[in-house]
Length: 116
Image (cartoon, rainbow, N blue to C red; front, side, top):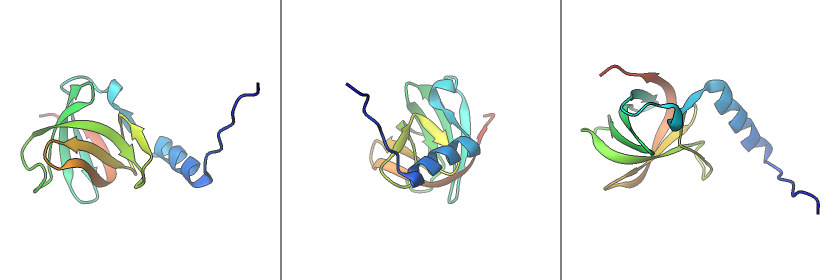
């Protein structure tokens, strides 16, 4: 039986390639306790990786003005496709907030390690 073929939409394929060009980080590559500064179009977040997709995050004046424990889901391009366990430039970060459910940030402009 022949293998099934998967046809990826050209726009989606371009977004995937662009995420590789613009860069990002897989959470599996981020050491436990590492603090990342994630600058988006609207806010700058600090997040401390707690392992297994968990993090403390703050930086939004209403949703997380103080550190709050969240589950980092990954990044997306503004649609339903999620690059799981990934924080990528040119994408929006998604995390599960204990009160506000799933939060999607504005587009990520920069990601850097932050010394606390």
